[in-house]
Length: 97
Image (cartoon, rainbow, N blue to C red; front, side, top):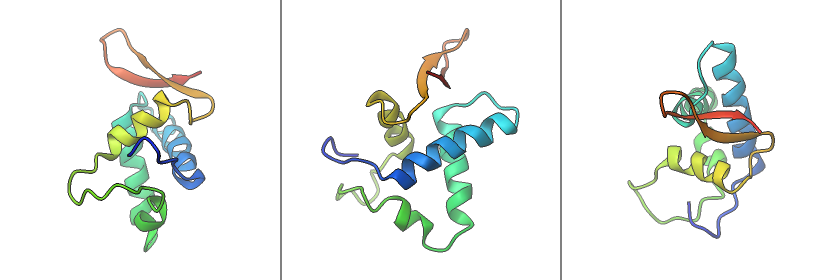
């Protein structure tokens, strides 16, 4: 994600839905777990990946790191009500703000 890019509301909503899905599954929510949930959501709808990432102006073909994009959304405070923290083991986890 380029610094000038602002993720779409659809992507930010998918992050929130991914967080909820991780909690419902009994998992400790992590950025990679949220990405897994977003992938599951996109694979269920044709064309969803393109719609989800229309906001991304990066020209990279193979170098896009969506886990990093999600983490960047947390660092920019774009995901309301959630933030990144570290658990007792030092893992980066997603927690309520």
